[in-house]
Length: 331
Image 1 (cartoon, rainbow, N blue to C red):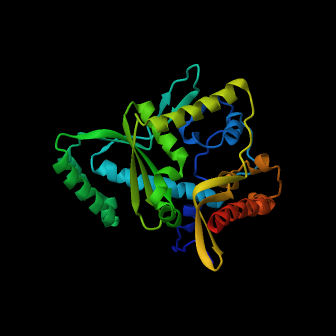
Image 2 (image 1 turned 60 degrees about the horizontal axis):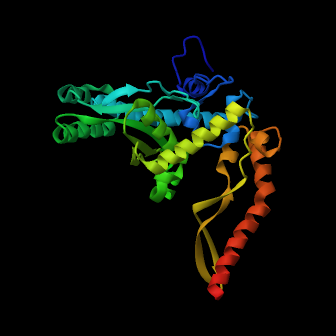
């Protein structure tokens, strides 16, 4: 029981409340420009957002906390960069102007880093930084960055765009062999940031939230394949918005060339590379009722009903793949 003179205290309520209620929300309004973070995602949901259509559900608290966890890990990487003297810009806004084929794109890279650091100042920053005393592992990373880079790049480093993405460890390690291609929208976001900043090289930097393992992928502005995908995406969305045409809804079942389909045949185990899966974009979308036509009180209930509605079709599609595979074995 609390009394006026009670000096016992707790962080829990303040901590939890501020992660949710202290988060700045993007205002929903009709717009004729895109955010770089939208590139590569399905046209239909982007069209609804750009036309200020209210989502079917607000984000659940757990989802909001995941967003904040992502911001937290982004800040950790940024803190190492700034302490090592490598940070040039932090979330600086840019834009790619509109033209006859492209809508304007609003861009805000996580970091632009490199340049010619003051290495002596950086060493002092690392030695004196209070956070590194509380988190010595980070201090060791920053200290080693200064040591290695000051020796290897005495005349400075190339300026690079850095886009930081955090994943849970199960996803990180399950997709480690194709992580660069696993999230095309991450590639397009980083590519747009390079175009907006005028930098010809960037880094897509992943961090595993459970074990802090990182993976880094270089991207180049002269990547013809990536530029082709970018152009197709931006021109397609530009067409829908400027013509006022509602895009088709995303398919509930999609083919994933990286997903393995395992089964037994004649008491022997087999694996098919590539199979049909439910579309994760729909499962995570807070426009899921618009997309599926299924309504309920909560988003979780809608997801469950949607998954049940496609279960047989999904099973049949993968059964056909298995049958085709078995037919080849029989020949």
